[in-house]
Length: 150
Image 1: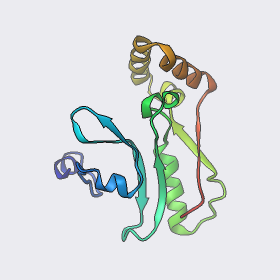
Image 2 (image 1 turned 135 degrees about the horizontal axis):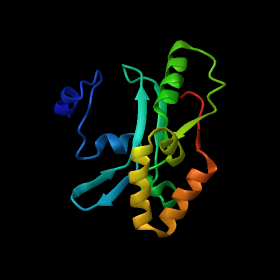
Image 3 (image 1 turned 90 degrees about the vertical axis):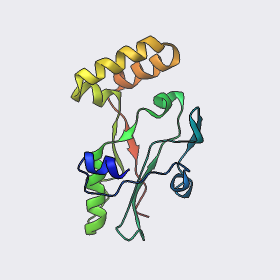
């Protein structure tokens, strides 16, 4: 974790959690996966104040066919940052009832080359995964509902 923090020049702490203790504490989904004796924690984003006394944002994914096994419908980083800044400064957060999802439609619109690779992979998998992917792109983007501050 420290090597990743240094290599990526991150200004925040990075933790390694091979036993999934933090994942369990923050109610993150843990899936069985070969090569992971304690399971594999699924994507989540939990932002706390520096002292950890207040939760500013939380999002956890439960993998399903509808979210391509947890690969789509993640919160858009800029929207999360805007919401956290509003909560930290005490601003009215009424406009944050939902935020954009970083999904297939967003990927297609903003990252064409990456989207093409994902599209090729999804086509090779086919079936229900391909249907979900195509429907996601056709609808033009998803939103994630936001709960009021904790």
